[in-house]
Length: 196
Image (tube, rainbow, N blue to C red; front, side):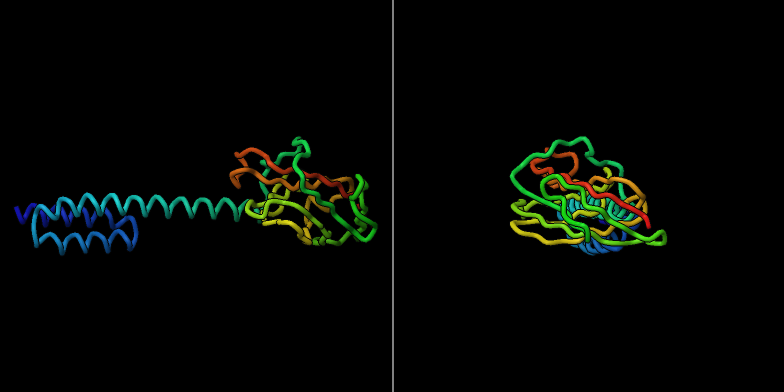
């Protein structure tokens, strides 16, 4: 019986090695327990496997989530809500050297032909500080950040967001902090790029 328990522990050790150092530590711990009592080993194996699966699953989810956020922030995603209607009680406007988007105005951003990165100002009020705010430029995620009662911010623009013409920026909060949630705040502003 003891040989069977030790062999089971070794097989589990080999099987869990692919899960990283946490799996190896669990298997080693289980193997050392194997010599004490066979009934404890069966319970310990079940617990270790279950616990290790939870850890691996949780870790994988975190990595995938982090990777998705990094990709969306650095390269943009095309998930945007360009057709979303303005809704909610918050207010937001953007500003350039030529003015602001208050009262539906479209401020002009004049750049030189060799500009690769620039910023525009943003003032936001009465957003729910417990929810993340997704900032879209032309329907592509530009940033995911936290806005609250009174927030002054800058929005970095590069690439497609600096092409000559009119662009739309949306500030959206979802009830579950995820793009698959219901929109609770959505506010839009436009700016125009002119290349000199």
